[in-house]
Amino acid sequence: MQARDHVDADDLHIVELSGEVDLHHAVELREILSAHADAKRPALVVDFTGVTYIDSAGLATLIEYVQRSFSYSGKFALGGVSDRLRTIFDIARLDQVFAIHPTLAEAKATLRS
Image (tube, rainbow, N blue to C red; front, side, top):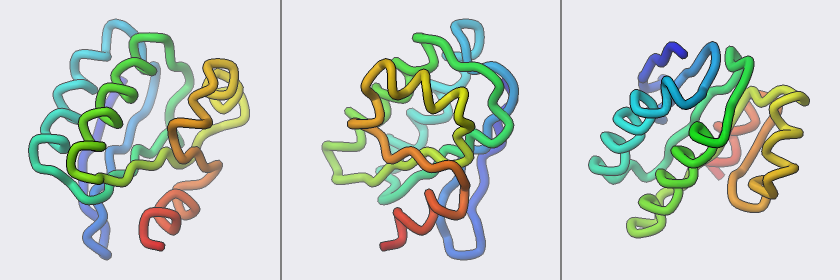
């Protein structure tokens, strides 16, 4: 997994991921998301456009961030989620926990509304 953390032109924080989000990379993702939780970001998008696989460790890391963001009413969305990855989120019933969008633009629009 590779991660790039940046802010877009509208001051929205985005974590762009690529590769496999698995047990071997969950620690790195946890560190990135923890920094955002510590900063109490009002909104965060995780861009899954380049992600090819996610396992239970990756899912657990996302859940941890969402739980932490509840304490400060942070908004969170996933963008660029392929149909293949969407199936994993749906099977785990995480589509009821995360705002999941097929494009990054849709995820950003959700957080801005």
